Picture 1: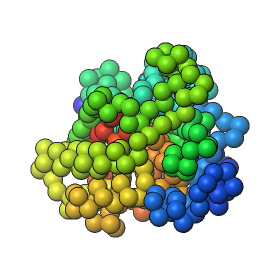
Picture 2: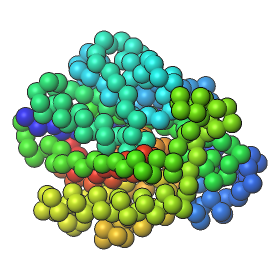
Picture 3: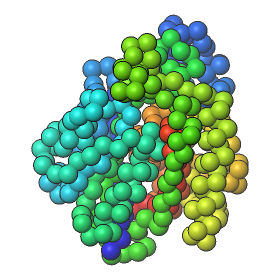
Length: 321
C-alpha cells in the first residue's frame, strides 16, 4: 500500500495589508520590504482564529476530492499559532467544525509543519491503519508578531492550506520520499519565548523573535543539503523535477536555495509576494495557487522544501494527482 496526495485546498482572510499600509504602522517603506523580502502584500485575520482558516481550507480540499468529512479517518494540523495554549488542540476544534469524531492532533514544527504532517500521514497510511488523512497547515501569525518590530512584522501573513492524503495501490501516483530533520541547538534563533511555562508567560516577551541574518545562513545551507540528499537517495536530479515548491519565507532564501541546487527559475513556485510568510500554510497554499491558475498538471513531480524554528527542516518528492 502506498500514500498519495489526493487533493489540495486553501483559504486566506479577506483583509489585505500592503507594504504602504505598514509604512503607517512601523518605521519601514515599500522599497525596503520589497528589496529584502520580495513581499508586497499579506492577508491578515481580523475576526478569525486559526481553526476558522483551517476549517475553510479543509472544506476546499474535501470539495476538490469530492469527499465528505465522514470519509476522513484522521486530522493532523500543523501550526505555531493555535487557538489555545495547550488544549484543546486546534485539530480537535477543526474536527468539531467538520462534524466528525476522529483522531485529531496538532504538531509544532513551525514552517516545516506541513512536511512533518505529510510524513506522519504517509506512515499511518502505509501501515494500513488509515485510508484518508486530512493534513492542514494553518496560521494566524499576525496575532503573535510584534507590530513595533519592523524586522519581523513585515514578513508574515495569515492563511491555511489543506491536503487529503489517501491510500493507493498505484505506485506511479504515490508520494516518493520524505526527508525530515531537526537541530535544537538553534532553538533561540527563531522563538516565541513568552508563550510557554519556561518563562512563565512573560507579557513583555510574548511575541515572535528572530535572529534574521543567522537564520538566513543556516536556512540556505540546510535546505540545499536536504534537497541534495533526497534527490540523490532517489537517483534524481533537478532536471527530473517539474516544480520546486519551497516554503515561502522570503525571496532571497528561495532564490539562494534554487541557485545552490541548480533549479531553473521557471520551475520555482513563488507566492511570497502575494501572501508573505504563512509558515506551515505556505507550501499547500502555493500548490493550491498553481492549481487555480492551471499551471500544474496531473503527473507533474513536485519537490517540496521547508525550514522553520527549532530548527526543523524537510523535503518531499510528491507527484501531483
